[in-house]
Image 1 (cartoon, helix red, strand yellow):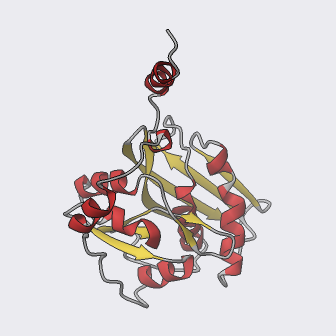
Image 2: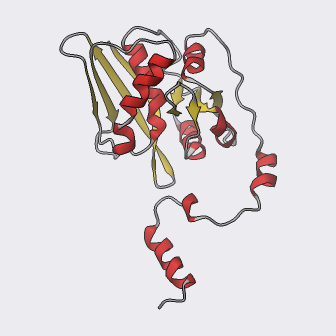
Image 3: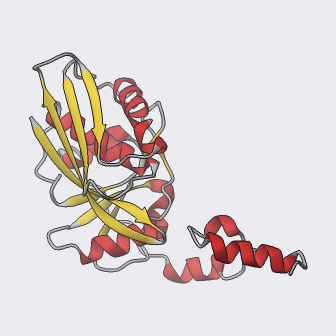
Length: 217
């Protein structure tokens, strides 16, 4: 069975739409195949996803699972593909059925126990999601929901675990969209220390600043 979900990949500071296609077939030997230019963090996701599913009470399919991250020519380098891959496997193996999979984009890194970890670039992803036709909202790890909720025009649903995400998508529970705390965020974040770890890319510019600060030519 084939399942499709919408997620995002970061390209610098911009978020690019990515479609996660998961095909679960009982034919052939059990094996996970991940394609679509995945980098190391994404390749390792299959191991995290497997244990997160089992530890959340779901069944690891004893089937051939092919996961495609489209477009194929865009490098994917983030652990935020964990949740959409896990949900795709559950849907493709028939463990869940949901009409909401096409209405909500999904991002999030999974811990081995199925809980969610913060996602980098939640703001950029929410900005891109707001421009996507047909998207009602997006599922975001609870620690990153406040950042994403700054964007208007998209419902940001905070989830704390794989189990909660499944329950929402299958209609077992309802989650209120995360309210925007724009004024509070400005007050909290208006004063901060400059940190190059907040800057994605721009290696030449950061190198020039380091040389200048060191007093070099």
